[in-house]
Length: 321
Length: 264
Ligand SMILES: Nc1ncnc2c1ncn2[C@@H]1O[C@H](COP(=O)(O)OP(=O)(O)O)[C@@H](O)[C@H]1O
Ligand SMILES: [Mg+2]
Image 1 (cartoon, helix red, strand yellow):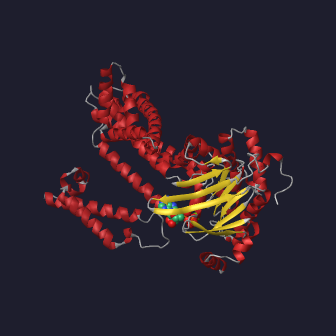
Image 2: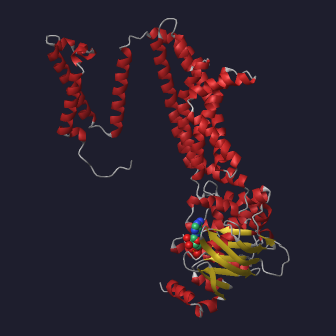
Image 3: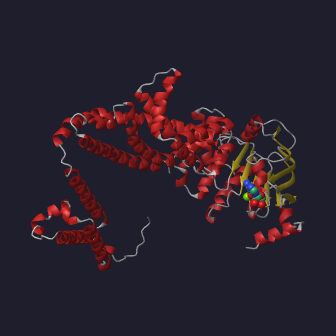
């Protein structure tokens, strides 16, 4: 958003807001019976002496409300960057506390995490990377077909996007993996998974590409025509290079989304991250450990990709003024 | 005038067919936008080397008319022959016509992702298959002729409006057109940049290229045009040499138009 230069009083300094927040937290804590929960246990030394459960709950809720309100009041005084860092840290800590309460076996995670990365993350990344490359090509073909004046091309492309956007990816994966062998061709799990992912994401990205192409002003087409360029040259040398600036950022988003959706190909037995997460913990009933490890790895991957994407976006904007 | 040092390779007039007749011939051109009758029968012959200025109130069909000449707009009736080539909607005819007709737009329409030099070299390389070295030399020569040789490696957005429009003119010239169409080339410019563009256009006219200019720059028309055409409601209402048109307009609507445009 475009910030105004007016200095408004901070909400986190206003007694009404702080009082309201405290009241809401207090009420919520009371209603959820905070005295009986794990939090009550944390405050046990103080509240144990209070024998009546209702009183315990009120004491815990009061502590919680005060702590929360003081926290936002104090963080509110920081500059924006400081606020972001402080809140991130707190949320992360809460996450850790939450995970820790599962009583996880970290040594078990330690023995598996290496394999999860070398086999799982690697497969996930390369399946996604190949799929996004194919999806890019499908989207290019789909969008130019949809915008062409050719009835066959328009029909085939709109049928394609309609089907692959309208059917759940999981079903597409099964259909391809189980359906193609019916035609007499044996497909391995990885090619089948790649095919499903790239067809599906190609259909989504067709719309992104189409919007990118249509955003180029009419004058660019007219100048190209007046110079005698063929339709193919107009598209490939003038229109598409300019659309790329608009297409690249959302394509990055699609890649991150695909990275996570690639977990669906675990159902046909591709040894990617999700498959390992589901299978590695089975023997020792350590499901939660493996799921949490996979969650952290997916998250880390997306985080890295987001950085890469931001960097690319900047560079593309600079090269193309 | 264009500098006399111009190399032969930048001669403006490519050796076209030795026609003695008009280089542009338009007969009874009619166009509709849906039910709206935009051009109601235009007749016009333009001789080789002639500079024709087209003026008229906004919405009178000036842009529509010159855009029909290279088929940026299609038309329903009438006959257009350019440089001996009848204009049909058949690809080979259109390609031939677009090769001999260059166009300069109000909004410049430079390619923002290419440098100035790349803007100039692209079409000769792709359309005429000109070797790279030759295309570069031609591009640089034309950039010098529009007096911006120093900007060759910049991107269009780094140039002023006047410079951009001169690049656009050079880009059209690089294709060695026999006819240049201008659609209000100075209307999007800040006032102080109008002059530099009009000067270049004046130099081109002096060089003998055939030009059709839609413009409201009446000073330019008076100085440079061989003929001024006044359009209104999709028709040519009056035409004549600039002296006659400006000093003694015959048609009441032409008089009204001139009094409005000259009185500010
Ligand atoms: N694409 C279009 N669709 C419908 N009407 C149009 C279109 N382009 C132009 N017109 C109409 O045709 C008339 C002539 O337009 P134009 O040639 O642009 O006029 P001028 O260049 O003289 O100002 C105007 O009334 C305009 O509204
Ligand atoms: Mg116009």
